[in-house]
Amino acid sequence: MPMTNKSDNLLKELDYSVLQQCMHCGMCLPTCPTYDETKLERHSPRGRIALMRAIADDELELTKAFGDEMYYCLGCLACVSACPAGVNYPSLFETARAEIERQSVMDHPKRDFLRWSILRVLFTRPRLLRLVGRMLWVWQSSGLQGLARRSGVMRLLPKNLRRLEPQSPTVKKRFSHQLIAPAESTAKPVRHVAVLTGCIQDIAFSDVNRATVDVLLANDCKVHTPTVQPCCGSLHAHNGDLDSARKLARRQLDLFNPDDYDAIISNAGGCGSHLKSYGHLLKDDPKYAELAARWDAKLKDIHEYLVEIDFRKPTCTQAKTTVAYHESCHLCHGQQVSAQPRAILRAIPGAKLVECEEAQWCCGSAGIYNITQPDTANRLQRRKIANILATDAQIVATANPGCHLQLVNGLKESVPTNPPIATPTVTHPILLLANAYREEAKRGQERSEI
Image 1 (cartoon, rainbow, N blue to C red):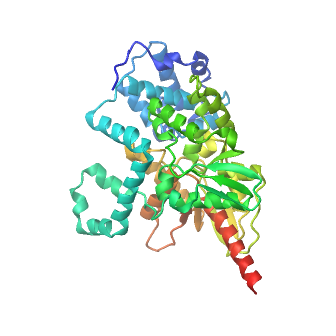
Image 2: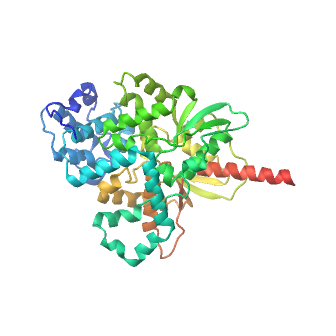
Image 3: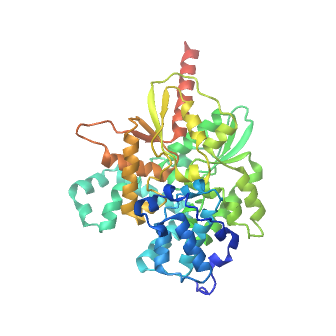
């Protein structure tokens, strides 16, 4: 790790008016999950901003205690939606974590190795990530995982690994590049779009990427999807590694020229929120700053884009089902995309949308928060699952891979067995829309053969 001058401070380099923008009005307090948990001021957005300002003003030393506080924050951005002053909390949050890492106040050999191996190695090399994903698929599909669990050998693992192993995602047999051609088109495309396939989305939710392409094709789009795509960098930026985040942003811009497309599509809430901030991330880069600003203008969440182009409503009749919608924090608070997924769900034949209490409350996933802060994450998970079960919905729709996994694992542990009830299915809204289009096409084909 390069040596740093600790007399410098990234928080001091911020436009000071950003730090001053917080009016300490307290409107963020009831929306903040960590403040709701503890009722401690330092665990609130305005409390954290006060700490950042004190460090920028040299009134407080940056210590491990400050690092612990910044990493206790979920980064859910609910405070952004609540703030009447428009405080740019994401920028403050990421800058604070970057300064924590720069000053090495959290350094520990185990932590350093995990950050290097995951952030700097695994999630900067998409082919390596796919290789690891393929190995995990073999482990899961061959029966070895089940055998290991039944034999009790898992009890030999360290405590943290024993806790994390059941939460690992189920890897798909085929990844995105095996399901999607680099370029697919309708007979008469009227729009040209690119689809980002992501990292975990690529190996664990490749069916969502395929569905995203199918939905766009059904709405007269030509779709460009390179077979190998870099990570968007959100995991790095949210964990204080801004250098890696910038490198990955440049790779994206080298791969996708925003001027070539009507839109660049993301279908993962957390990724999309970060992808829309490349202009800010690269604002000081003389080569990429203008390109990144144009990228931001073209980046669209899939739900946002479909509503924008007035997507075609499927017309086939389907069995009636009830659907609850859990909002990804970074989709609703980071991207301000909330009504659009609901509009898509309401357009699906047979689907009845039922509102979930606290639909915008964080489920506890928050990137890797459920790994680094398991106790708080588990309490948030249980709260979310209780609200979902209260809807009696058969399907839970959500638009972020981390939320999806958190809900699946929570339902697995929380659904009552005495008396037994059916476990709701967790899925992506776009999968439901794609299935409706497929059913419509199937019935049209059947009628033409009669």
